[in-house]
Image (cartoon, rainbow, N blue to C red):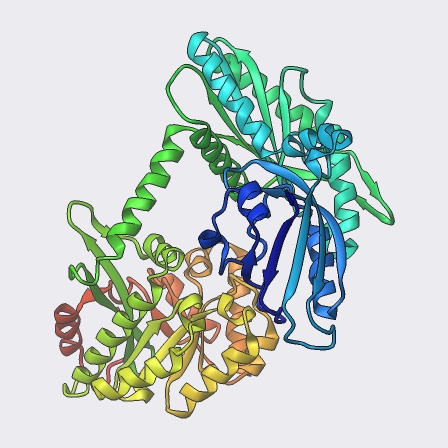
Length: 562
């Protein structure tokens, strides 16, 4: 009986991924557990898994690109997850010079060789680089620990470790240097745990410690876990010498304690991972414990995301308008501000739900809705003498601006609503500029040619690079409210405000200050040359009808005074 697995694939195409399977033999079906119907049409990396050597895969792919036969030994996986070690011979079926040649793969099951069975067993449960436990072994031991906790009143813990700024080593030095660092980290971590504990490489630069018997109550367990963390942090802080690079490793660590309460291994890992990301958010090189408050935050965000998907259809969204004043000409425009009124919770702050909309992929729908309503209102303003001169400022999120077809969507809305393009101003934040500067320039130039204006919002809080200002078709800089708030008491903020005003005027740009709430703030800004303002000193954001009433009460041509 032939025990060699035979697989034939379609021709390999550059940048198209692994070629798809067009034939498998009976041994393939028998040894992998996949039926022919399940295998045909799948990429030929169907059998790859966690411990499959990525470097070897890269070497095989490069050989295919050259049309050359190659041999390798790999860890593959059957349909039920069972690992098995194979020797792989691959070759083009036709001439190597024929770019459309299919490929044949013959795989010998090496696990049947007695001299390699111990190696197979080890590779199935250990990380190929560091020799530490892999995910499979970690989850198996975590299951055993959970079962023991159910029988005995004791607390154990998971410690999820993610190296900070690992790219600083891996990118300039290459994978070899990064691998050497990971090996040294693994060696140091092993000195921090007891024999009963488990340390695993979870993937990439992530490690997980399973800590046994930390204490009989939560306080004792937390204290012991903190002791382990501080030992790890101290060892990682000692310099690593990797070839010519000296590196001190920091790590963000999430800690999840568990005891007799029913839970699952997957849930424990997820909670430890969440705590690690909290440590990242806290500035890195620190640790955070998972707690129920963190879980509630995640659950609330998931619930809110689901509700946000339906907010447009349920008519829960609205636009409010905050006036913009010029000290010489009075009211010159307004900023459209999106509001989400959720039944039972009131208004949800935009700084919460806009990032959420980007995260869950509904920012295009929300952005298009905002632009459509704003342009409809702008067209209506044109029919009211007291409002016909107003400019409408609309915020555009970085993700929305980068979406394909954004320029066309703006022009389509303007055409459908009959709104004047020269009365529309799009407000961008600095983060949009670092994504694809040339693409941003093209999009802005196209819209600018139709009369649309641009303001750079929150200037000074991001990258504030002069190369953006001189290359982009901007009309206005907006001083962020964080600088305006303390402009009378913080010399740094007052200096920043002055610098922005001077820079903007030197480039021929308008400068507007947002968040102006007091006469003193306004007077200071006027003294340094900023004459356009937005804030509660003049008007809070108002619903459409209230805003119209507010405008119509303003004396025409009057200066902006309080």
